[in-house]
Image 1 (cartoon, rainbow, N blue to C red):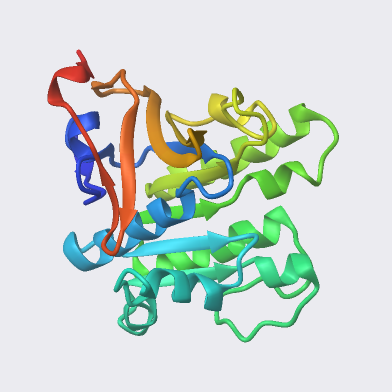
Image 2 (cartoon, one colour):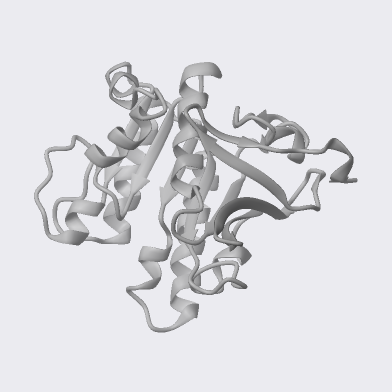
Length: 243
């Protein structure tokens, strides 16, 4: 299997060396658990270290704020965009009813069809190999029936497989025991990673658990991780990997 290395310290060894190329993985967790940082790090490392251009689809955070968040770790997204190694698709401004000056954006209201067209255009323009969709939970807020959410997610997942990009779909969780917002996201992806933020004795701690990762061995244990000046670093143990 060809692998798309995330370059995140301690993580790739938990899944056999990296994500399976062309797979779609759900990254779920509560607010503050580090999901967006994981996505930014995945794209930055791909574009900077592995010659794999990327696309970041943002439904809730405006691009200028994403660039600022990335820059705090020394990840210069603006330079990568100038080098045509990275694209940010602004779907957040349209959802909020705000104007945008971004090259890649939805400008006539939020629509899955229009978003798919913009994803096609961005992936083709930079020959993208990686994509982050942040976040699919925003789609669920448009539907009352979970089956409608699943249908839309299946369309997105099918599109990403057709484009042959290695993708992360980010999902918010509300309940501590839930694996996704709508309860269906994990069934249309090839992998599922939950990122958790818990309080113990007045101290917040982060950990992650790999629930599934098709076509590869993966760790079956929780792993603590930290977010430092260089991004996410996972505390890993090689003997915890499922064969």
